[in-house]
Amino acid sequence: MSERREFLETLALGGVALAVGACATAQTTTQAPLLAAPPAAKEGPWDSSWLDQLTAKHKQVFDVSAYADGGGLFYAKNYFNAHRDAFGTTYPEVQAVLGIHGDAYPIVFSDAIWAKYDLGRRVKAKDPRTGKPALRNVLWQPREGEEMCEYVVPAMVVAIGLAQERGCTYIYAGA
Image (cartoon, rainbow, N blue to C red):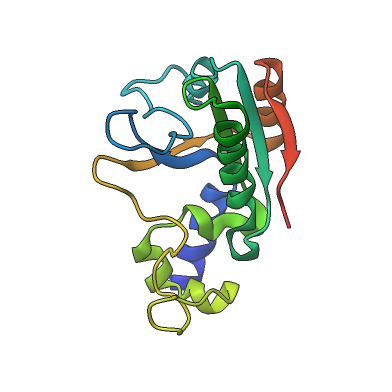
C-alpha cells in the first residue's frame, strides 16, 4: 500500500475521533483529565461509554475542526483554568469533551505518525526545541501514568448532539 493511501486511510479513521485528551486519574496529575480511560469492553459497533462519564455539574463540548497551532485545545485549557481560578471548581465537578475532526487531525496523532508523514511541515508547526518543522506532536506529551484516550463515533454531529443531551454546553473551537 502506498504511503499516501495509508495516510489517507489513517485520516479517514481519525475523522471521527471524539473526546481526545490526556486520560489520567486524579492521583497521577494535578491537571484535570478530559475523560477517564475507556473501559476494556464495548457493546455493538460503537463505544458510547464516554457518554456515561459525563457526570460533572459543569461540562462543555469543544468542537475542534482546525489545527491552528492547537488553538482549540487552549479553549479547553482556559475553560478549566477559569473554573479553577474564578470559582474554585475543578475535576470532577468540571469536565470537557473535545471533538477533534477536519483539519485538526494532527492533534490526535502520535509522534510516530508526525514523523512518518512530516505533519509539522504540512500544518506549519515548528518544534520549539529545534525551530524546524515538528517531527513530533508538540501539543501533547503525556505525563507518567497517562495515555491517549480516543473514542471513534459514527459522526461528530451526532456525538456533539448526544453530549448536549447529557448536559454539555457547546463551544466552536475551530479556528
